[in-house]
Length: 427
Image (cartoon, rainbow, N blue to C red):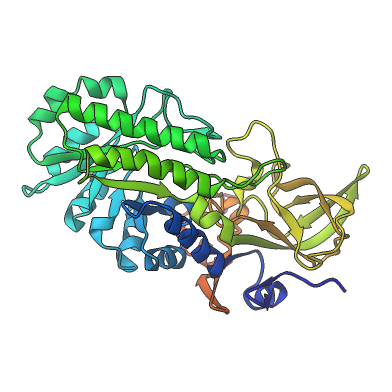
């Protein structure tokens, strides 16, 4: 019999038996090696911040923090995660285009390194509520130039993110009127899932050039510049992993030239998908195997309700994530199946026409490289299935790091309106 997948020596069937399926399994060794592999090659003057939106699980964030990562957060809950795992406020930035007054107050009370303001109205609002001691701010720039190599562009075109470079160039009078906000630099994030080293280096150079130009024009001291990241993870056929050595060498060269002119500027790169994506596997169990009009389907107990990224969000053409039989991990993939979940929609397709060994009910199937943008970026409440369990394997020991939602958990959050359940006698 073909061996099944193991995680740090633990058979995946043991994890499925102990914690149930659907299940996210995170390999702590992979998480650590991804971060340290980057950190070892990157200029030590560049601070690496983990973008919590990629995977806000507290234990995943905690592993990265233990290795030295700062955190970029975008909600009160993510800010609370950062606090609970002991991130120094000086190593936290808060960004997002629609921050609430409550979020801005929380940032001010905690004394984080900077709020990343994404509009001039947000800047004015923060100035009106910031403490008298002042609130440091980075201005998020939507540069005039377009990003290179991004599968999902976040700047260089009309976007809700950031302030257009052209608008910022005329914002000098407003900046001079600020009383409590201290603009300490700039931020730009051009796009995500970039797999070409030259494109990332070019984007980095472009962001630093824009920051330098705006700093001089607006008389803003460049105390901090966050030049984003966008490092990609290869999910699909014909995609190759990012050449990390070439990427970091190019970034280091660009940064070295910038630091000669601005030796005291704090430089930040923020990465989410690249740090977390590699470590995760979404594990589902085949419930039924059926044929329909000449095609074979595997209906599993979990689907796009837990892994919306598998639908191909941001892609024009639907392509499959790496999908393997975990029960027969090394067996020849000589059959073709469409793998679906339990939802009542034809869009619940985890993988279309996937080559797998013969699948039988009860077999485990895994969607790999799924450590980022999993359940937290998915419609987990569709059909009221709820959130899957999440397990982190650290040093050979599995830890339940998020328990599965039960039906009772979900129903207990409902509030029954008075009289809503009384029969009217009609119909």
